[in-house]
Amino acid sequence: MNAVESVCSGLVPTELSDGDLLAATRRLVGRSNQLLASLLAHLGEVEARGIHRNRACASLYTYCIYELRFSEDEAFRRVSAARLVRRFPALLDAVSAGELHLTGLLMLGPHLTAENLAEVLARAKHRTKKEIVRLVRQLDPLPHVPPRIEPLGPEPPQLVPPSPCWEQFASSLNPVRELEPGERPRDWAEPMDGTEQTENAPANDGTEVPLNPPAPARVDPQRYRVQFEAGDEYVELVERAKALLSHAAPGTSLVELHLCAMRSLVAELERQKYAVTPRPRPAAASKTATETKLERAPGVPRQRGRHVPNAIRRAVFVRDAGRCTYRAESGERCRETSRLELHHTKAFARGGEHRLENVTLRCRAHNALAAEEDFGRGFMARASDSSSHEPWANGDS
Ligand SMILES: [Zn+2]
Image: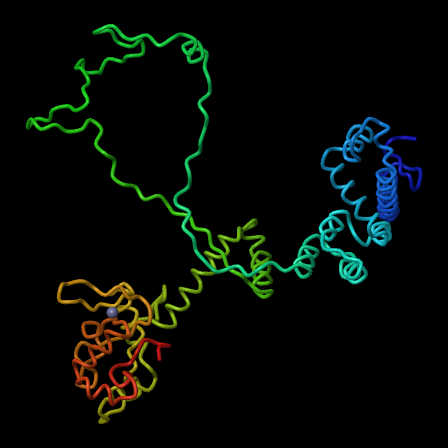
């Protein structure tokens, strides 16, 4: 029989119709599963009898390699599986029926007991490797992982070992000889301008300057190990994002996915809180409908709203670089970049306008300090909170 002749039909695969080819392939896999189960049972019996020793093999593993000609990987997997099915014969039925693949069997093996065998086999039936990984962790959960971001430093240099050359090898055979006075090594190179090269060359003004001044410090991109626990929803969202990007950016890594998600999140939060947008509308267009109507109505005095227009918010955020602008007497600026609020230099309650020159970013503590300076500590203490001072950024308090 030809080596590629179908054992199911006696025909070579190229001569089969589509339907017959699929049916024959399926039958072959069925037979293969039965053969695998039978092989595991036989291997287990060989080891139980110890007869591999009669073939000059100290273990079933070496017997599989040197007598049965398996690769080392195949031998290790089949011997491990043979021991498992000998302990739990019910596994043979699952393998023979094609309900459990060899990889799944080996993954579940360490977690099987006589008590959980039936339940685990039912849950593992026809499961992919990925699904069995989840099942294993349900059977044997790992301890909590503390969230952390750990600096790893810059990319380590590629260590390429110098390739040995004959001269280096030959010189290593000769003892090192002290140079005579005035004698130079054979690989000595004369300087291009004919002057002797000294450690430090004199500069024009007579002071010595180093020949190789230190290069300016270069900050390499840093790497971090980021670790946290996540739930099912997170894993599902990652898989959905990867699927959605599968055409536009195939093979997107988890790091790239995270970076993309964090950029979107920060842009959205900045838009919500400070009206930062890549396409800002002109200031007039960002007035509320009520403000516009009041302006248009003749004879009606314009009312002052506490809402700072989005265009002003954007400009303030950009100008102040998203950081509290309070400066101490020493000139040192506050480093706070979270819980920022909009502060009117001339208090809104005293007629201060929503103008770029009159509005700055302040952290909550320094906005409260400004309120105390404007209205007095006693007044502010009587107020339920600092919200009576100025309107905050969108979404704050
Ligand atoms: Zn501050």
